[in-house]
Length: 393
Image (tube, rainbow, N blue to C red):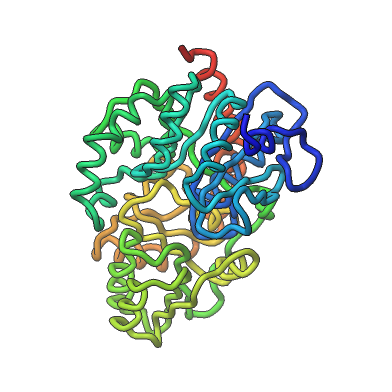
């Protein structure tokens, strides 16, 4: 056994080693691109942070291995809330050794995202070692994403390699029912299950109810990636067409990007403001400062940002293509189409029905507390893990 394997498998005795729970009923290894930092815009990292924390609380043992460009040293261990992440900057012998030992240890291996050669490599190790792996798509197969740069390469990659990778998996996890439609249009996995994302209830009071603003001035806003699939150009155009726009401002929060630079040059900066990235408490304060949060995405899987808005008690307008239709009957948000007309009508509807905001935000908090939280998601995920392990051949 190499020194890398010995170090990876040695007993837990310091903060530089794995933190695990005392139960051994289920051992889970997550492999991700990132560090599982929930205070970053990358939604996959937020998912790992939530699932790992609450899986551990429910008695599972969780290890996370991450690949990221920035590490202090190869194999650096970052302590999170109830679990740790071991990170590497490149695909090299130390990372491969850590994965081999982790896969040997685990009952089930959980991969995240698509179009990733690293996931293919990990899956191949799993198959050789006789360990089940599952894949969470994270909306990566949405047709709208395929239209982004590299479309032809993605099609070739999927048909030549990825489809088989998905169909060999012991389970494919979709975050919404609609996402399964995207999956089945390009692959036929043997086991597909749906568990939505969530938020950490401990981060939210869940008793916030939005009251209609006392003045006629309104602040609308968005928080997330400033990128084309978020459909922000259409949001800005729809906002600019509002007849009441002289009393309304739109604030867009997110990491700087060339797409954002183009939008800021195109639209009136006196009414549409780009406020930069917001993390941690700044993020919560920003969402609470809004009268209405608008999520205009062309594609999504009921984003964690939108769930945070519900948890914080801010009224939400969200596009149907954000894959939220199966929750619309809960009365927790306004819904619209992602077109220029659709978002314009949605904005007007939300603004003209401010008397509905208190009940709507109350229903939003109820939805978070009853379903869209990491405790519920981890409970359901552990059941799926158990069935996968029990049925694995």
